[in-house]
Image (cartoon, rainbow, N blue to C red; front, side, top):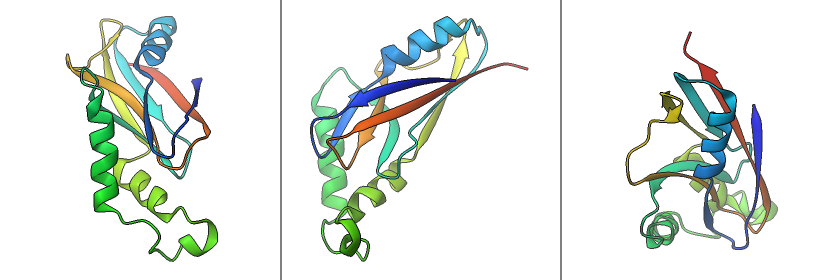
Length: 133
């Protein structure tokens, strides 16, 4: 297991962690197996999507903001971040990627992002590499 630390600078931000994950997989020495990428936070998530066009990150954030209203949830009475919790629950806390020939088996346009829905904050990403049994 390895931990990547990411600092965000905006309320909603998707940060590419693909290269950090690739290094962890390479250093693990695993040739065939699985790589799990996990965000241990209630208001952050992990997703895989395109990164060739940086607008995709903003589009994802904007779409979620249109789908999930701010300031109208019961949890907002506690700390005004219920929408962040809902977004994180919808996107999900983790992604699992196959490892083939020592590399992440991802598509040409795919990258791995931590999605911070309640920033700016310092977030952790836990990466676990498992060999094929």
